[in-house]
Length: 564
Image (cartoon, rainbow, N blue to C red; front, side):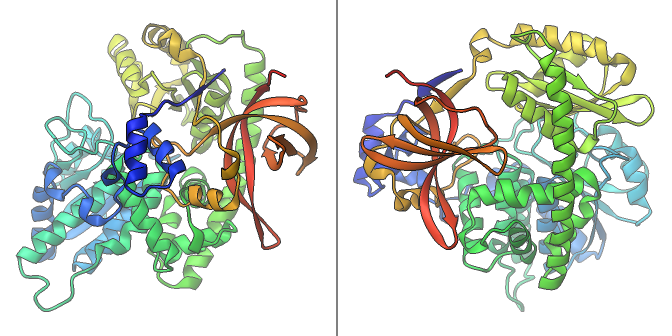
């Protein structure tokens, strides 16, 4: 591991300060390649217009025609938080626009991901005229063909990377399809659906739908967009930051979704102080628990609930599922750790793991945890049916996981039954008998593609934090900003004297640190290893609240002995 300081442009920092940005934030933003205050704008007027998204207008006309002709629409959702929020955005907007619309979400364990032919057959029983995929569909060549053979049209809204062959749908809206010039390639599935609804509202306005009634305020759905965007861990580029900022603003003002407020209460959080952390680590996991262990229909119903009692009931069930998910994850992680302890050090280019008793819905989380430990691309598999394995992978910077799987598929046709995903996360299905063959070919392929420089874990920090900024006010200022994937939350690095340390909660260290004559409270979570008397630590500054008293607290992320 190597701890380094993130560079920044002094000219950009100075320009931001001159524009009125807080001096500390100016340094942090400059290190994230923000060159002017205009890039920090969070108003709707700075969003990329829907007209820039290829086929958004065509999708709007297709939907407007369907609404006018009283056709039956069926949203086909994915079973994660992005898919659930995208479905809720579509359901709420389309219903308000007068559409006849229902939704269908596949069970992860039974049908797997995407618009498969089997799922189309189930959908056909409901008699839809038009299928609308959200957060899936770009790889559903066979599913769309099946729908077409049954006389059902398909509108695909997705953000995943397309393969060599596109489905023959009536319309595809995906910023990552060839020829689309939409600048925000990082937009989540829920963001794509939100944009389609913006285009649809404009189309309905042109057709005079709102002459006699008030237009639906689509800004009321931004809290759902914010949750799906953060939970899907897409890079927070300028456009995504606007969407997230608007959603958090709505939540903090008390005008947000009843289901989200209920999920926050179930997680012991105050929705009036909602942050990106709450979206990513409190609300997102509880919503995802439905898709991992049960049926995401429960999560979608929570997001569609307007009655507070109904929302609270759904949230309580989701909270119980999340606790069960944590238990299963802990057991699986123990098994994975036991396997890793027996591997050679250092590991090869990749790590591929499989245990017969692993849960399909949790292998992605295990892949993420293992990646944190070994700093390698990781794939974890679970049984899927009698003779197949379903895997989920997580990658590291410098290694495009989906492209690597595509190369494996080309080198060994038929080895991968299905696959798809992004640079940093992907899913796939293989035959159980092919596990060793796949492991060897994936390792060989990755060894070619993964640079040696990427195999060392580099912890990027924002350098030292001046003593004057170790305060509650600064901690609150930092928490109020929009941080996430591609726009990382501040991580500082300093040397401290360790004055005191004790175990709390059985798994954590509570610390008393000394720096420049100032005593600071700190925590090191999930570690019981005693620290030396002097440490160099990468840490975050957060707000700790106990018995109504708030104070700044450091959370140590990475620690190494410091020179005396």
